[in-house]
Each structure stands twice: as C-alpha cells, then as structure tokens.
Length: 353
Image (cartoon, rainbow, N blue to C red; front, side, top):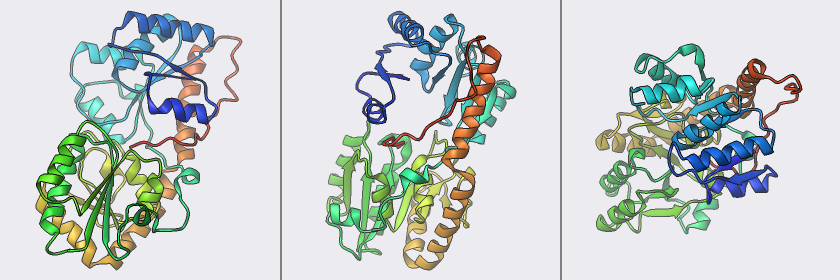
C-alpha cells in the first residue's frame, strides 16, 4: 500500500497497477495531523512494515510506525550532504531500523562524514527493469514525434529540471558546438522548478530551432532509443540515475560527469565518457568526439549494455530489498505474521527521472 502526497504522479501509476494508494497530506516534518492519519492507515490496513523515501514522509510516517511498534526502512536516493546534527542522526539511526542507499558512495559518505553505523546501512544499486524498459525496435520514434530530420545528430537529457542536473551547462555546450556541428539537435525531457530558467536561456541564446523541450513524458525508453547520444551533466547530489541505466541498457552512447554515484555505473573510456562537472569546454569536446568517432562510441555503448544487464538488474535490486524487509520483519515479527511469501512486483508505468 502506498501513502503519498495528494496529486503525486505515483497515485495514477499505482491505481493502474492495482496497488492500493492513499493520498496523505504531509505539511511539515512533524505534522501532528499527518502522524495521526498515518497511525490510522497503519491500524486499519494491518500494516507490518513502513518504508519511507524522503524527508517529510520519513518524519511523519516513521514516528507513526514506531508508535505502532513497526520496523522502518528509510531509503536515501541522492548524495547531497546530510546536515550533521542530532535531528538527522535521530531520523536515520534511531527512527529507521535500516537505511537503503542507491549507491556505495552514498553509504560511504553517511559513514565517514556523518559517523553513522555502517551495519545499519545497506547499499542496493538501482536496477533496470528490462521487461518494461525496452521499446519497440524503431529508433525513429522521437524524430517522427518532434519533427527531427533523420540525419540530425540528436542528443538528449532525461531528468528533473533541477539546477544541479546541469541543463544550462549542456545548453552552453550546444551553443558553442553549433558551428562545428550544424545539424546538432537536443531533446530535453522532464519538468521541474528550473523550467522557466531553461526556456528563457534557450530563447535568449537563439536556440529555439535547435532545442526541443518535451515536458514530462511517459515514453522515456522510446525517446532514449531515438538518440545518438545521451548526456547527463549533473554536478551534485546524484545517486545512480535511472535514466543513465536505461540509456546504457538500450546501447546509447553516454556522456556524464564525475558526480555522486555515476562512477559506480560508468567506467570512463570503457562504457561511457565522464567529464568534470561544470566544465563546458570538456563537455563540448566530449560531444564533438562522439560525433566524429561514432564507431568507437558505439563499441563503448555495447559494453555498457552488457554491464547493465549483468550487474544492475531490477530483479537483483528487488531481491536485495526483500532481504532487508525480511530481516527487519524477523526482528519485529508478531507471532501471527508469515513473512515467507513477501515479493516485490514489477509495476507498470513508473518513471524515475
């Protein structure tokens, strides 16, 4: 059962997949009404374990879970610094029975920088669900959808429109490359708080004929499959981005940065190209190399595909998460609860940008 903020996209996806979902308004980290409502959800639905994913829900729902005597699992998806105070320590080390990080680097920072107990933190890499990821064989879907010429050199980025995703650095690189690569085009897929700034930059710099902003789209695999190159120039906070995994699984050449957990997935020069964050010149040069050395880039993309399918599977991620659930339930299990049938199912429609 999913409890989430009203209006969240996950509500529709859960309903389509037959998973019970309850809108739960959580206004502040210590919202008394939300805590009380979560207590009622737990009681009425005989909940046995609570798994939280962000800050506000972790406070409200973890407190409700502990008042109900239930185990709590807390996920940490990004590598942003955790404030070194007692409140953060209490949230991660006292309210949570286990913390799941989406990459090793996130766990290492929590242990070394914050002094958290490594035994309570489990690193489970993000997995790619090949059953729902791979689109139809056509590599022309996005070109036809957005009227892009067949011979254009098509780049793409799929990410929330947040400052630290580096969209403006990519746009600056595109601007510098227009003379060298006249047929260069860029698709930006996603929405978020930086949308106006990005649109203003595109207009001010005369890139409206070069750059297409699609907004939020469900057809992420189809868009990725149409690209000549996927670029994610993030400069902070990254765990292991789902879009990178999808692009690698589809055999799309990739350029990204030495940020967060990206190095855990991309081996620089072997499965993709990594450049320093916030370095427009290095990013421009890397894009130009891919354009002029397609064969070499496709060889790296093929190696990337093999690596992802062998080491970053959805089933592996789900199995490891199930093991964390079982361990937590075993230590907190009421006598009448059978944990043997627990399984995580594949949910159609989820998109992690």
